[in-house]
Image (tube, rainbow, N blue to C red; front, side):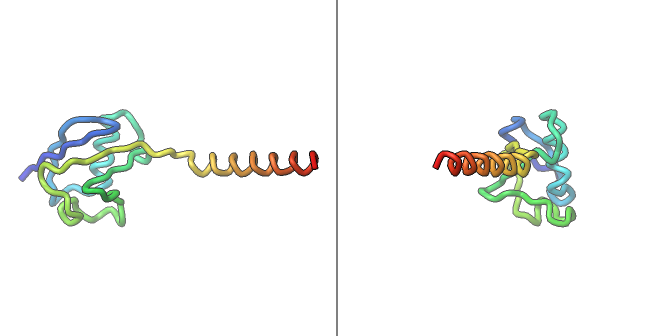
Length: 102
């Protein structure tokens, strides 16, 4: 039996899925395809919980997703680690400049 999920965020619309057959990676892949983004840049939230891939075998029904559920798809920064490293370098440079001024 197909269930409808309402998706909003990076892409808005309804997706028909089999809750006992679909996994989080499958849903993420479908939302990514429809929003023209890569799957690893999509974060899915349902009922205030981030839907995590886990081992990739947990079905949506096992995770508590029900028919007519609302899913929020957000975009995550893939380069997040890089920006933190750049920020640390900038902070280090700022500290050196302050030390020279003193």
